[in-house]
Image 1 (cartoon, rainbow, N blue to C red):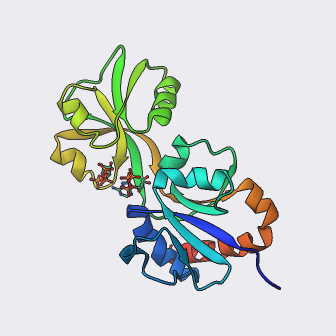
Image 2 (cartoon, rainbow, N blue to C red):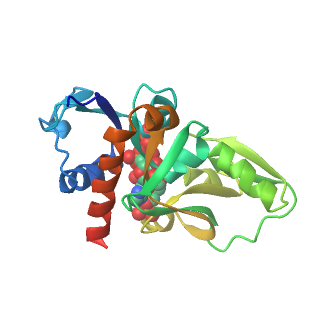
Length: 213
Ligand code: ATP
Ligand code: PRP
């Protein structure tokens, strides 16, 4: 029986480096070297499966609107996105890191109205509201570590892995907001319409994740 076409949206950058070996272990291999190409759409060893490689923050959007059926995205991105149209059936356990607050090393715990710089504005707003703390959120697009040094913010909310970036800039970890890893997401409509194609992919990836544990 012929298979319905399936599109999988992969996050480019750091997550892609971890995704490709995992997909290979699950039997999905791009027809050419994605990292050596400027193309955005790739055939695979399965006639009906295509990969699209896009910015991490765009993955939930493509899957939500049904332009892609399946996606791979960091939990940080998913927490920040509107994910009402998405299922999150599998933790791929790749690109693991932590979403943390951080401050200048030794700085006293800020009180009163706190200035917090982050690119994760929605998550940051929710987190401080849950803590019952008043916070002014300052949106940045990168290099968050600079904000406390320059007096722009008291705290930052950012990804921490080894802690090297914080240390190199005289900052320290404060509170854990959430452990982060990349997740498989599936559009709710796609799950309904293409369940027969999608479930085996989830199963194969789940087995590959389990084999690594
Ligand atoms: P963009 O290029 O779209 O602005 P970016 O620069 O944040 O995004 P990457 O650095 O490739 O892109 O990170 C993408 C994802 O990888 C993050 O959303 C997070 O889930 C994960 N990630 C980020 N930093 C780390 C890290 N230091 N260690 C492990 N995973 C990380
Ligand atoms: C990410 C994150 C931190 C750093 C943390 O930045 O924003 O700056 O990794 O990792 P570490 O704890 O191992 O040092 P990235 O390298 O993705 O650069 P970016 O500033 O472009 O996001």
